[in-house]
Image 1 (cartoon, helix red, strand yellow):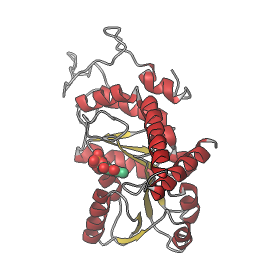
Image 2 (image 1 turned 135 degrees about the vertical axis):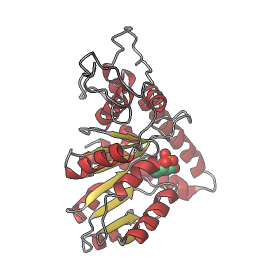
Image 3 (image 1 turned 180 degrees about the vertical axis):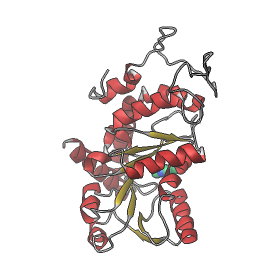
Length: 293
Ligand SMILES: Cc1ncc(COP(=O)(O)O)c(C=O)c1O
């Protein structure tokens, strides 16, 4: 199967992967940390040497995620925070980062601490407010990190507007709430997409995971690959296997989540929660606009 198939097909069939040894349509679960060599000490599978760098199950999960996101590659991490931290750790003293305010508190806490400890200038701004995007264009940051829709306020940032305002920055988009079923930030100008796969991507409350996906495999991406290989923040085989299982139903689950949210919002509109209703409708309209592109 190629990765131009519909997301529903990519997800349901895990890119058509089968276990050739058994003929099973579900990938085999192999927890080996090390791999056999022949009598000349050559690896029987040259791409499998040691589990930290070479894991068939992790590679499969990454391929499915990359195909869903429209990215050329993916890197899985043992949590969403591990993925976020790896990106932020690429900044050096004297550089300038812009972080969206009012996002997932764990991200804000890590970024504030890291920037403070390493002499990185940090500007926090509400990028969901279009009037602030203009201010962004005067800052010339090295890296901009946004989260859309944001957790917990569900604020929506216009990714294309941020791209236009900071053309030279590495633009990082935490798209956890949207999933690749609703938004594909790379098509809107993102350089790196982040997901906490712990949330909707896995969706069964039994895996902690994070993923990074690049627009292109450039020097910044190479540094992230190096960071994971050297620092060793790798996800376990079983978690990756569970994630592949979960991704098969991602499009169906997201569809149902949207339908539930819409029904709840419509009900809330008749009650005391009108501001919430307006926000959900704004998000739904935003996704419709994005998806019609
Ligand atoms: C938007 C967002 N990004 C990142 C994270 C961190 O992910 P994890 O809990 O997998 O480390 C969370 C967790 O709630 C989140 O909501």
